[in-house]
Length: 352
Image (cartoon, rainbow, N blue to C red; front, side, top):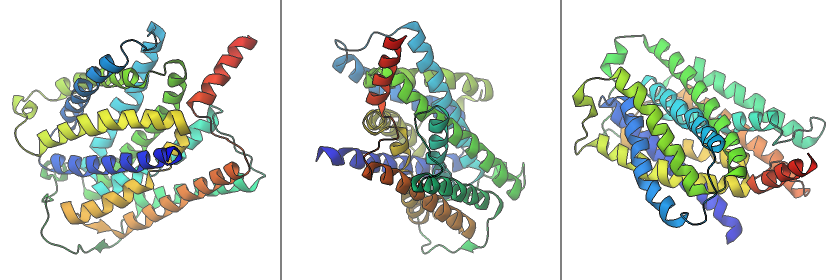
């Protein structure tokens, strides 16, 4: 049963992320400012996680040095503040299905940066290496289809939805539909690359600071401080900062508790057990959950290009995963989880 826990954890994580994308799109359609949303989300996450860190890790928490805090602060900026702001803006310009499809690029970017930082190995002359390279090429094709080909619209099956969908009018008047789509895709590219680097760098930081609850709380607090600056600079209307009993409050509480709190902790646990690539490889589940949610809850119109691009991305990711499993069947652990990375760092220090 213990061996199945990481798999159950990543399924639960992707269900939470899918709910976040759907609720975010619904709230943005209602006019919620994305910068304010991120600030409230991270603030709620801090309030939720910090008491647990103080209770459960008060006595055995790893001492926090100034250098480690700076690393956590920068990691939070890269993977939470920058990534979430870019993703939220991209979601406004596009739709929830494209957002979930773009997230499927995460395993490829994570794999690329893991190879670059020597946390993952690729042997091009082996079958495993060829599968991974093929997966990268399929991912590039999928991204190109998502960006430049929309195709005909697929008619929804239902006409009554839980969260009524309508395009944000003020964005339609600023730029054309095609330009909005390309800008959104570029913002997704920035977000996913920041997210991939975040997963890899988290593994490095966790090797020297393994207190997961404290690590999560510090990231939430750092990103809340960072998010407040652009929010207060770009939005001075007091009405935008008010939260009533509506979709905005539900979104903030859901993201603050479930996404920022529960998911970040589960994610650090999975990273420690299985490494960054394993965590990223579960992303195709997000697309499946979000497509069904977009149709049944938001009533979004799905384009053929989004479906085809999503299929290419899913195939590419599982092609890479196939290569990973071939390594494991031969008794090779190519991706370094946190524990192995920690032992490698300690060994290097002893040699020096």
